[in-house]
Length: 407
Image (cartoon, rainbow, N blue to C red; front, side):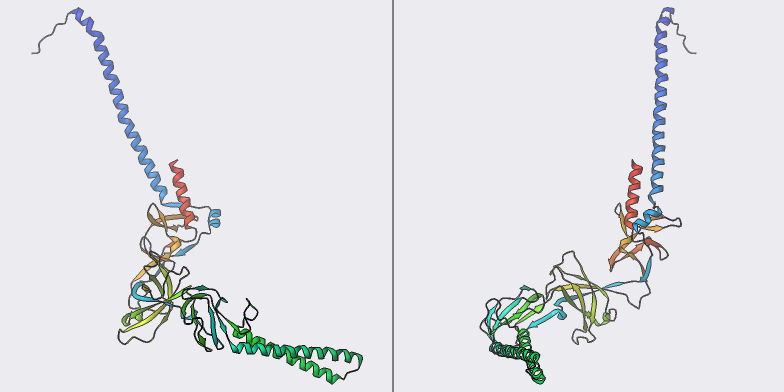
């Protein structure tokens, strides 16, 4: 049985305002709590809707026909080919023998001056040395005699031409004079041609009639110098060796068991400490049909560009040959290098859909690159087609769309 509490009438009147105020405060707190519980729910629904919207638009991009034409969009099929394996061998850099030349005199004589040393960079026609030759001096003497005969024959011909016009000379005399003048001119031209071929430098830079200029036949680097001033030389004596090092040969020794995998035209990549991270690329130009009996290897030659002159003759390098073995049935997928783009540190390609101007953005796993092609390890099939030219425009268009949605 609960106890009965009796409240005096005066006390009841004093408590009434306090009870009413407490009731109003509880009502306000309840309403505020309900508002706060609804607000996070609404924000959550908005975030989920926005995330869903972004995910729905991130996997595709669309271009108008005009934009596709301006970008020159090109679509090619994915190529499936036999797996290309890298065959590694050590090699040595050699000068391109097809761009080497020895410098030799055509006459005997004594070396007066030498202007080039090993390592000099020279251009075609540069004077490498000066030679004093009695043979050239003798030819110059004959040139003077021939010039005198030409002057005499020309004078006689002019005189007979005037007499013939006056009727005071026979026609046969005029014909004989013309023949003699032509013969004298031919003899003079022959002697001058011989002097030019021998490198005569008469009258140039104050040189004497016996001076012969030894000139560089090609542009390149002086790799050898065999002569000094004062030395006597004979025709054909090697004085200098020149090499055009804009291209070099990389000669590798490939084991007998692997030679059959290589052929002329095989792509090769050359690595050297002189190149750092850079890789020189070339193609096989020769496979030696003879094996070294001791090492059982064949010499394989690769020609590579050396415009920066970083590859040094005699340096050791590593050569990776890309070969497809006829004994394997495994295949790999490749796409042109231009088809692969990077989005948010991911590699993607753009695949056309059935809808014109609409392209799917597909993430792939790309492997190594060679000869303009990129290996694809996952994300594509042999039936797919990808955008090559214009893929960067599609990437830019997609990034613009994402930036617009964020704002």
